[in-house]
Image (cartoon, rainbow, N blue to C red; front, side, top):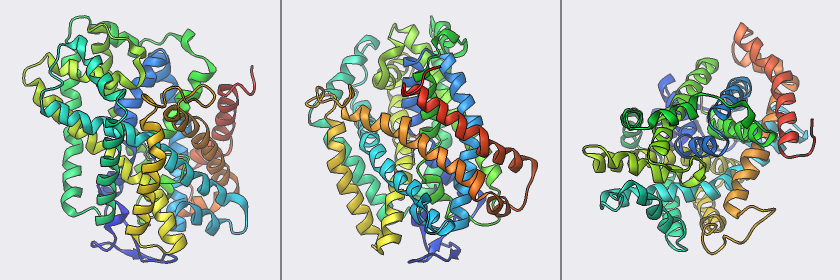
Amino acid sequence: MKTPSDAGNSATVAEAPLQARATFTSSLGVLAATLGSAVGLGNIWKFPALTGLNGGAAFVMLYLLCVILIGMPVMWAELTIGRNSRANTVAAFQKLAPKTPWYLIGVSGVVSAVLIMGFYTVVCGWIYAYIFRAATGALAVPPEQTVEVFNALYTSPIQPIVWQWIVLAVTSAIVMAGVTKGIEAATKRLMPLLFLLLLICDIRALTLPGASEGLSFLLKPDLSKITAPTVLAAMGLAFFKLSLGMGCMVTYGSYINKNENLIKNTGKVVAADTTVSLLAGLAIFPAVFAFGYEPTSGPSLLFITIPAVFRSMPLGGLFCFLFFVLAAVAATGAMISLIEVPVAYLTERFGWKRNLATLATALSMALLGVGAALSSSLLSEFKIIGRTLFDTYDFVTSNVLLPVGGIFIALFVGWKWRQAAIAENGGATAAINAFTVFLRFVAPIAITLVLLQGLGIIRF
Ligand code: PFF
C-alpha cells in the first residue's frame, strides 16, 4: 500500500500550502491506497456483526443498495475534491469555497476520524491479541468454548488497553517512518493472501454439516426484518466501510495524479471491498448455524466463529494464526488512513512536522480510546443515552456524523461546485452525468430521510 507518507519516494511533487506534496505514482498505487483504507475491520468484523444483528439477507440487500446509490457517487465526489484542491480536508473546502461555512465539513471529518479511532483501536487490539492467542494454541479449544476465550479478553480491564496502545504505537511508527517500500510491497502481497484465506474459510464453513441454514440467512431476504434503524445501520455501514463522509477520501484524493481516472478507481474499490465483506459473511454465518452460535452475538461474532471454523480443519491452527495476522494487516492499513486525516490537517494547518502531528494524534487517541477499551469491563455501566462509550463513538460516527458529512459533500459537488468537478474529471461522460444527478438529488434526499427516520425524528 502506498500512503502519503511516501512523500519524496520517487513521487511527483505538486504545490501545497506548507510542504511539498507527494502524489501516488501509479494507478495501482492509487487503488492499493484507497482499497487499503476501505478494507479493514468493517469487512471482517462490522459487516458480519451488523448483518447478524439486523436479520441477515434483508440487511445485506439494503447495504448493497446504499453502496451503489450513495457510496459510489460520494466516493467519486470526495476523490475529486481532494485531487482538485490538493489539500487536507479542512483546507480543501476553504480553497474551493473561500469564506463560506463549507469548511465545517472538513472539521466534522477530523472529529469523526478521532472518534472512529477511539473504538477502532480497541477492535484492532482484539485482533492483535488473537494473533498471540492463535500462535500459543490458546484458540485450539472445542468450538463451544471459543466464546469463553473471547470473553476473557473482552471483559478484562487491562488487556484491551494494553493492546490498544500497542496498536497505536505500531500505526504511529509506520506513519512516522513513512511506509517503506518493504511494507508497501508486503501489503500488496498480503492483501491477495487475505482474500485467499477467506476463500479457504468459506469452503470449510460451507461444507460444515448444517451450513445451509447460514447460507439462507445470508442470501434469502426476510423483508419483515426491515425497520428504520436497520436502514440507518446499513447506510452508516456503507459510509464507514468505504471510508466516506469524513474527508478520508478527500485527503487521499489530494495525493492522486491528474491523469488517473477517478470513476474507474471508485468502481474497482467498491467492487473489491464489497466482495471481501461478502466472503467474510460466507465464512462466518454457515459456521454460526453449524455450531449453534447466536447470529446476534454482535462484536464477538468474528472472534468466536473463526477459531471454531479453523479448529475443524487440518492445519487449522496455522490458518487461524495467518487469518488474524492478515486481519491485523488490513485493520492497520485502514488505521493509517484514519490517522492521516488529522495528521494531514495538523501538518498543513499549523506547520507541524509529521512526527509531531502523529505523536499528538496518537497520544490524544490513547486517552480518548481508554473509555472505549473499558466499555466491556469497568465502564460497562457508564452509558450515554443507553450506549457504552464504545457504542457511542461507533453510533455517533457511522449513524450521524458520516451521513451528515455525506449530505453536505453531495450538495457541495452536486450544486455548488458541479462544473469544476466535471472539468476535474476531463468533461462530462454518461457516468459523470449519472453521478452528478445522484449527488444533486438522490443522495441528499435519501440520506436525510434515512437519517431522520432512523433516529426517530420523523415517522412515516
Ligand atoms: N473503511 C474502514 C473499514 O471498513 O474498516 C474503516 C475506516 C477507515 C473508516 C478510514 C473511515 C476512514 F476514514
